[in-house]
Amino acid sequence: MNFNKTLDGIKTYEAGKPIELVVREYGVDPKDIIKLASNENPYGTSPKVSQAVKDISDKMFLYPDDSMHALKEGLAKKFNVHKDEVIIGAGSDQVIEFAVHAKLHSSAKVLMNSITFAMYEIYARHAGAQIIRTTSRYHDLEEFYQMYLEHKPEMIFICTPNNPTGDAIDTQKLKEFLRRIDTDTLVVVDGAYMEYAAFKDPLKAVSAEELIREFSNVLYLGTFSKAYGLGGMRTGYGIANKDIIKAFYKLRPPFNITTLSLEAATVALKDEAFVQECIGKNFEQMKAYETFSKEMGIEIIDSFTNFVTLCLNDDQSSTEISLSLLKKGMIVRDLKGYALNAIRVTVGTPAENKRFFELFKEVVK
Ligand SMILES: *Cc1c(COP(=O)(O)O)cnc(C)c1O
Image (tube, rainbow, N blue to C red; front, side, top):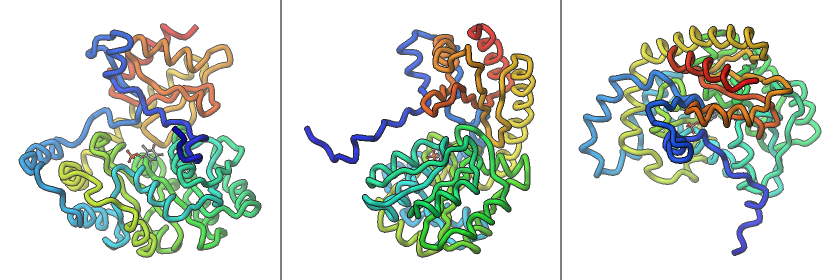
């Protein structure tokens, strides 16, 4: 069958391998499998959230509250913005999709970093847009600006901290960059790991409120999938000027997140102490990776997230090493697809990290 030609250049997104797949394909005992591949919170979610979800499980037959009032109120309070400046998505992924379709058409251009979150390109290609990438490994905003002048893209993606490298941009530099961009260019600032960056270094903390007050063309993205420990609930959000949000609403399917997701996210916002405690443990544990990489003579990228990127030496193949680890039940992310001979490892619990260090030593030459 012939399909829409825009699909031809699209590579299917490869999600972190689920535990079930490793059990099926490699016969590893499920209790020996550790997943450090999708940057989930290894400490789970707040016990208050689990309880709240159980308590409303008898409401599953009802469609969710499509106004999402309680969750939007919670987010508006957290970010000190207005409810009308917030949209909820089935993961922030869905908000990226809204943004792309609201802005891009088949002759449009979109600018993004050489190495960044793979879904930006996939969604942009759905709209038939042309992808333009910088050349530097890390976000170089001067290079972004030069390419912006040259190509005049309709849309720009900035990911800070960036996935899959973990580095973050200085907030002041980001704002200076945004001041040079015309207000008809939609700039997406993806803060999927912002809670981590804000904890580690206030200079990297981006305030959604400040961004949208100063810039009518900026969309800030956040998610419950990472620090809030709700990856399975598929809930994210966008914060922007009311006009942008209004345009996105035209693309939003009704009831785009579930009753359980709504409840989970709303309650999660009320237990900030849990999230901060997990983030504290994350950076405590990250030190073990820094020590380990030094011992092993491997480059580690300074990370402002809940994962580390280990850049392997030339005689070590990231694909072989991640496959060997997988066969032993340790799931990490091979970054070969991003043209990096590196693996990305979510910082786990102390026991998970210790196991990673043991297995890595076994599989590396
Ligand atoms: C995980 C992630 C997202 C989105 O996750 P959702 O689960 O769809 O909310 C967005 N951007 C980046 C950079 C991510 O790492």
